[in-house]
Image (tube, rainbow, N blue to C red; front, side, top):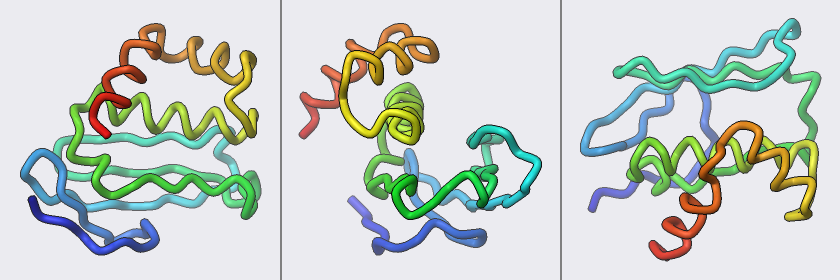
Length: 115
């Protein structure tokens, strides 16, 4: 299994997912209300508003996560985005997660089984 070095995800980064290398583009725009990730079969585009993030709101995802099925990747990204509002694993944090991913419990169990 090929591993990529750890580091910041910035425009121009490339990583391996499902046997292919994908280009990453980070778009920083002050008008963006919520962070989002768009995948178009050749690249991931990450839209963020730098003024909404601070050091405590950084999202760090292990590079190996991109090798997971898309549903698992979606779960991880949304889970981490929920931590911007809820800094813990409280009932409120999981209620927020459930608004976007109704089967989050199943995905979480699958993810825990992969460790």
